Length: 176
Length: 116
Image (cartoon, rainbow over the protein chains, first blue to last red):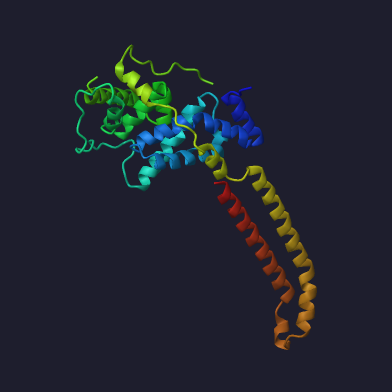
């Protein structure tokens, strides 16, 4: 018998059921860790640390979850805040960064099908953090622009612009 | 829960296919277990602890207020005469209540910090 997210959340709220919360973690660990790994330029250890903190915060704050949103959107919002706090700690600019991508990364030309995925990882580094976050949420995790705006805590127009800009940069870099 | 249409991918766009393909499933590899280990103690336990601590501190303070004057009375008899001018029973009761209050504040702070 499989429980819906709403069933599991209700069990966590009513009984502080750690098994139910564990099931939610199992369901969403992959997209959350993947999202944070993209923001962390592929640093899996950092992404896992931030993802762990994301889920611990979710456990503490689950009483504030509003059922009119998807659980995944809410989780991505916490993950995004974790990333911002981490970036602030490292005195880096997070989603509002204006810096141009580093010059050391050469733009791949005429990518072949076999190394396209490898190139995608490099091409993603050409995007700003805000563009990368919007692309990962909307194009990889299937969130609507509205949901992504909610998770990232920014206006809908900003998300749309970031997705559009990010896609253009990726297309240019990958020559697709 | 809201069931909104996700971001619609462009038809046959190789970039969308590539992005979807790159979002591969990450195996758990003990991640869930680590998260569950890192979860803070249940809130109901913290509340129970607060109740037990409060009752214990108040009982201790009451006991001290009740018994200390008698103990102080015995001690006062063996003290130098000029010390007897000091209101020892009042002072002792006040000190005991102050200690009890400080313990209570410390306990509440500890529990609040743990929950955060």
